[in-house]
Image (cartoon, rainbow, N blue to C red; front, side, top):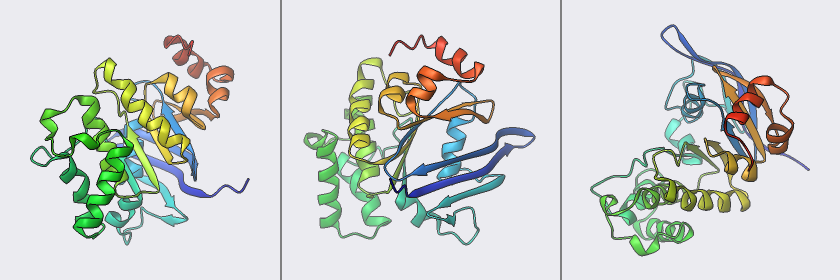
Length: 248
């Protein structure tokens, strides 16, 4: 199978002052792959994702998008972010806008689409996540799970090539987690290229093409879902998964 490299992370480093958060991170994201990044809190997973989207500036190393180094000072970051979208832990919706306006704002202001086209896109993706009946609601009228589904629709409305998810269910009540994960599972099945930082082990096991286990700012082990969940080689990985009693 001809695999197309979309993102390549090469020797990525990130420090805050003297604190090294990421050390020598290397991995590739191929087109259509769903990759889960798992590991204990404080292992650098979210910082890694924020570096990939340039919300944090890497201290060293390179990030290539279709072979172009996005850490190059000449890179047009807004244009890059059109292609590599992000879904945050706390939704980050605009409180003063309706659901529809939240999903239209990116296509209009960043992608320079007409209002008509932006509205069509917004409605299409709100339908996809099951939120089309809430287009006139404000975020405060929605549950956490509904807000996160709107945030996913908003990211999709930019028609990105890659979606980054930073712990998308960690701010949700347990009963709302399923509705968000089912939307994400559907996207993965449809071939969306996804990089997901998650502590939902069942999702990581069942949906991911590849799983990366991180601890203390390094990649300890990576492989297919069954490599990691059933045949982990590193003690650290085994211990972490045992703590989750992974009977999934």
